[in-house]
Amino acid sequence: MLFSKILVAYDGSKASNKALDRAIELAKVSPDSIIDVIHAFDFPRVFIGEGLAPLPPSLNNDYYNLAVQTTDEAKERLKAAGVTANVDLIQGAAAEVLLDYAKENGSDVIVIGSRGLGGIREFVLGSVSHNVVQHAQIPVLIVK
Image 1: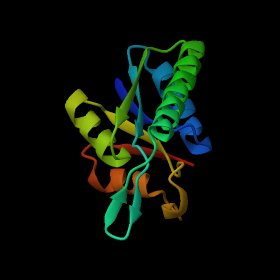
Image 2: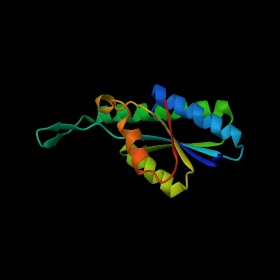
Image 3: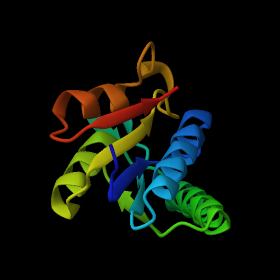
């Protein structure tokens, strides 16, 4: 099965690096394919009781800079691999961002690591990958 529009979820984790490697392998099998790499990020939120506590702007700036650094790493790896690719940084909940992007851009497959940097919510299968598998209208390749 060959794919022409490969969507990869990338957050810099070990599993997402493996997912990117697998997407590069898929792209090399089909030379006309394009890899779209998405790094979805959201600014941290702190709830106190039922209210949302404001965070210092410097923290949000640091978080954004880390997201930019993560996308730059993906761009370098793709360039070194010699594949046609786009790398985007999109703010929002990761699973929702991926599913919307796949639908809007006509992706053929979503390649995602089994566990990302989501933290304590990640047990057997990451909450993002689980959500993507449950709601995707296209094939999803989960890489361990």
